Length: 75
Image 1 (cartoon, rainbow, N blue to C red):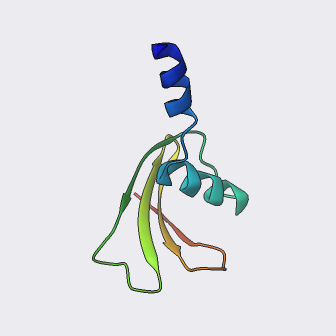
Image 2: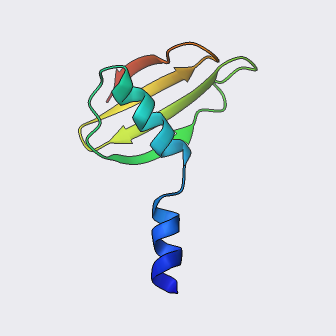
């Protein structure tokens, strides 16, 4: 039973997975997403800003509804 619960959690949709998928769809490399965190101070009512850490780079993603994300590679 625990194995089933674990596999369901592994397939759960998380902000980290959604951000990594969006990043890849826009042509940026993200071999494996390690973490994501919303930048509340930089976010506005119409745009949410997230920091996504991947094994091969870190990105600031500004998400605007119905548009491609604005992506900035950061250190």
